[in-house]
Image (cartoon, rainbow, N blue to C red; front, top):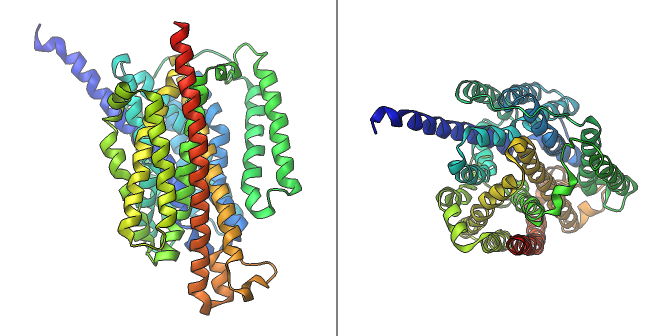
Length: 498
């Protein structure tokens, strides 16, 4: 056999590698943008926009809520009209939203920019999976997806690090000015490197799409408003009730259409259900930490925004080392054991971090490595399982389902740890501040009222953050045990069925 006969195979594999790199960079961009805004919270709180605590949470979550609600339809659009074109379009829309945010002179305009960027991200992330699946040969596909899953786990770390570099100027606008041109460069790279993939000629299921989006909006609105209004308020309980009604309507419609957006019957598979729940749990722990970490390091340890961004890098060590090793390890010890170890490390890392808030940073960094080990074990395994649960012609929907569970988990993590942190923080404020109406709900507000109590105020915040991390650790451990039980039962049924 001559060298020329091997040339097409070598060229194909080189293109596959380039596509993998390109979609990983696009993924890091849109996922990192969820985390990087957390670094800007102290700058935004003291800016001329004058956002209150509820508006700050919406500035963080406006992007996440649109991202989560539209990501499954975004994948379906890619399946129907072309994954490459949808990915490029999403990157351009993402850049446009970042530009609007950078130019904002008021909170509503900033929220509008965040919403537009979320719309772009909802097209980007699921179609990264679609482009990768169809660009990679079957024998390399599972490994490529595992690498993508592991690298996607670094989105928060990259977002913190790159965001810290941009925000070190002292202006929150530089974050948005930095990501806009980078998104456009990514669009050019995808346009040049990726090839068009076959399209699925089916209906987009507008009724099912509308009901799913509306149910997701209602659920996430309740989650986001919970910290400010109280979890027992009429608005929050009404949002949750509406989400249940709309969700039931979505199931009713999807069971009766010929080509559903996402067939609810797929979740009869314990493997797909466990992978979806596992992805949600993993990102709950991840972004619960990222929401707190920047403020915890800046307020609690006196770090600069740049130092706070780079302080998350220890998480990346096990993810980088494990991205190529985890698929082989999973094949050797099995998926349930790999996931069990992953969730133990994640919950243990969160618990360790909660106890290290006042210890030397080296101790804090070691617990970040423990947490990163959990992500390195769980994310590639869950990504491969979730993608294999749907056929290749639904690669965009598979990517959308991954992304939806990721963003829902992120929103839950941010809302729950935010609620607990604020509740404990306000209870531990100096007595003079607790007599105010309303009681300050952010460090910046409290210090503005009582500048000479800076130390007591930051101590109150650290106490609240530690309590929130402990709660996150407990929830992750319990939910992780459920995921492992489902995965074990599903594989047992699969083997007995054969």
